[in-house]
Image (tube, rainbow, N blue to C red):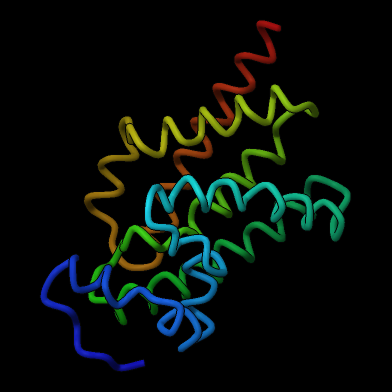
Length: 172
């Protein structure tokens, strides 16, 4: 889709519609199959979608190495989808692009112990690190653009969340 770039983020937000979502498969993926269109906190909505995405991965691949391999593939698809969608919107990391949260939170869940409390803790930790962007996440977010940059800063937030979960597990 070779649309002219919007002049500002407001115009991009106005262009992020169901019609835009269905205009190209990359938009559908990048917007988390519609979860990125929610009017408030689309990143949180995308993170929520990471849970059923993880369950699907668990069904397809029972062991951790194959789950990670599927997530690497999902990451690479995300690089393409987020770059294409960002170009179409004229905003590299539009708020409605949530595939990065979906894939990153699914990765966190690969390393999360079973149980609702652990899943809720994993969710809270991932959102915390994704929103606060401690070093080097903020630096990566500022320097890396396009699809890889969109995906990479959430990968770093996932690594922080996994480390925090492992620390909590050790204390438990």
